[in-house]
Length: 167
Image (cartoon, rainbow, N blue to C red):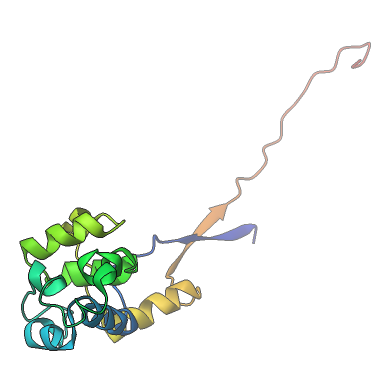
């Protein structure tokens, strides 16, 4: 049989979101930004979908922070916000941890695009989604569609050659 099988890959489905390790690191960042008491009173623990149970205000990020007197540059001067890792901050903003006054402070001190983070949530991925993405990355979860390539038969062709031959 003169048939060659050619495999055509279907486009992968991009699973948007983060794993629980990012949520845990984001929770630790929240505690650093507002203090343990405010973080657990208003935001933590996150729901199974990664949403905050409430919001903290700009005052929780500044004057009400328990370390405001010990770390004036970090708390009052925005140093802790400025040092926040992008993906963790994005998770916190997207989960709804901050009210408008807190978002204003984050925007003022962060080097990241907080406004973009506020309109593009970064939800938690389920365990099943994470396993599927891992399989896709390893090339095991891709569905392949076989496409047959058929060769056409060669037809006999008569060619007339001049008496002097081909040059």
